[in-house]
Image 1 (spheres, rainbow, N blue to C red):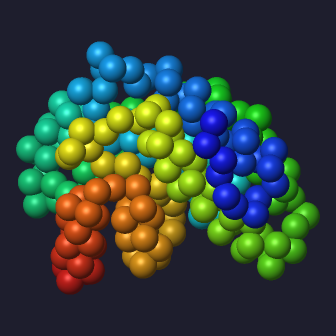
Image 2 (tube, rainbow, N blue to C red):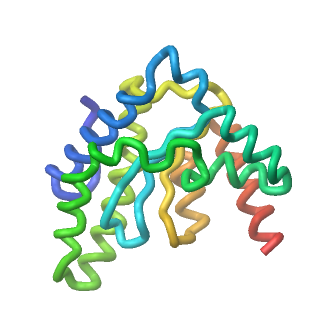
Length: 182
């Protein structure tokens, strides 16, 4: 088991790694991984829950054919993926603990904990890649995403940590294009 360096409570870090490993292992295997083109963990902006998503090549192709102008959006956005929210049962205990930690916490504590949870999610994906639980093809993306939250610099850093340089550049170009169109 690869350790996850982050200042969130150890039980939460271990619980996150355990939940993610079990969820992805349930779905991802050598025979099936060729069909997949994206793996993600995601959280809400308050970091009170974590879930996972997997995209399939067929689903991505359909979405991109339907909306070619936003083709990259469908590649990088787990909320649009084929299997968004699968394996939720593996995250139930963790999500209850995250919600409990938020109840009654001061604003400064919430801000710190949110950053810690986000870092733990990225570190979990890094650990799963290092362990070989996730074995992406050269064009498969690995993403940590936060709903209702925009921080392009942080998103780019997460993508850079989780993907080969060619995909990280592709993401950065897509963000630049999206900002220019906005």
